[in-house]
Length: 84
Image (cartoon, rainbow, N blue to C red; front, side, top):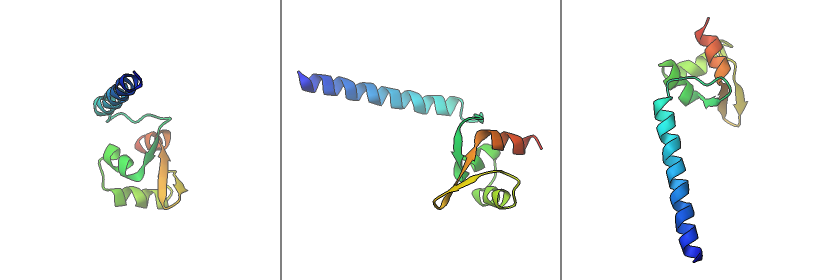
């Protein structure tokens, strides 16, 4: 009985993960202002190389926070950069 519930729960988790991937693919090109992006994700959204994004961050053209060794960029900061 418990294994049936575990299997059903696992199937539900797999379904939800698949739905999230699908939503990301459908809406993947839209920059969500309240979402936090990595520099790699930002480079894909902006259509440029990751190193170019890092240079824009270092020069202050894109606002970002450094977390450990990585930068995190608020979606609204990407929108601000694009609207310049």
